Length: 157
Image (cartoon, rainbow, N blue to C red; front, top):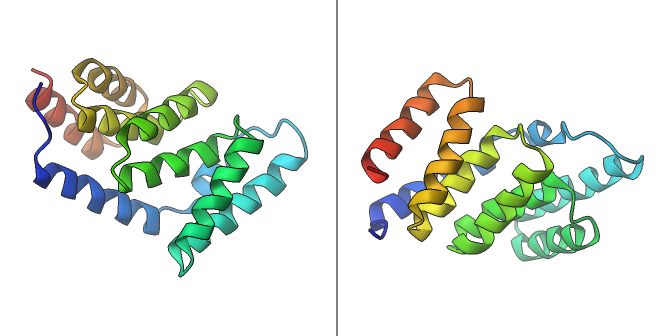
């Protein structure tokens, strides 16, 4: 299987960084609360993300990891840990995290896209195709869908 070139890896890193800093945190707050503590957990996640974005990234990551251990079924914690795993080149861990997100929240369009990115970085053609095809079914963003189709055409054929 082909390994991703450095340009692809750099591009993925840049896209993730831009998304991390520009995406509204509220996008992932749309989880269905199972208990009243879900809102409190999401507030802790938001605080941890702010630490990562600010001048204390390691503390923020550690806080997110603790939250994910205590609340393994919180898709927001898993999602952000998946993003940070991609940023640090831990693609297997990222794929595990995003797989967990799509199991918990099958309508999380972004999770399918990042799951596909993680599989692509691992050289997993089948995983890439499956995640990107799920993304294409759910996404309403025609421009992003075009980008994903182009990647599928180029990379998986």
